[in-house]
Image (cartoon, rainbow, N blue to C red):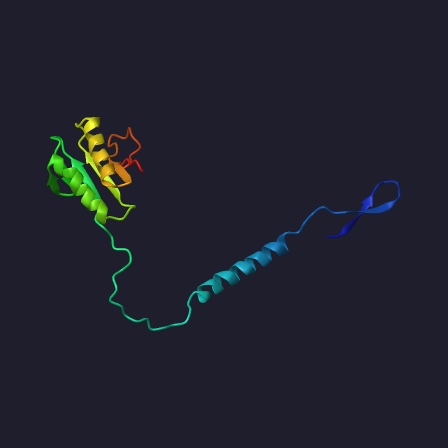
Length: 156
């Protein structure tokens, strides 16, 4: 930064500071630092090479088959592919809830011709069985009128 002579026209030669910042050196330094970090970062994650031992323990997170309750157009209830009698739905869901993770989501699929009450009855049984998260599955709009979502869900 420098001082430039100020010509006031009265014969005084005064100086005033320039209000300009030269950012070129700053940009140069930042680009050099960026390149250094880009080269050094992969070298820092390599670590020490070791021969890891083998184990027979099970994996921590086993993928589970989702719990899907389906109600067809005739009102029959299916748990996954298993047909259930109307009075056997709640005991079967309670049995599954006892063995399931508390964060398990139960998906409910209902035929569009069913009444709202029939779907809500099944959702109530799922909740009574001990599942805290219930989701509804629906097809997205194929005519372009909807948002195109593959499923609509409701949580907790």
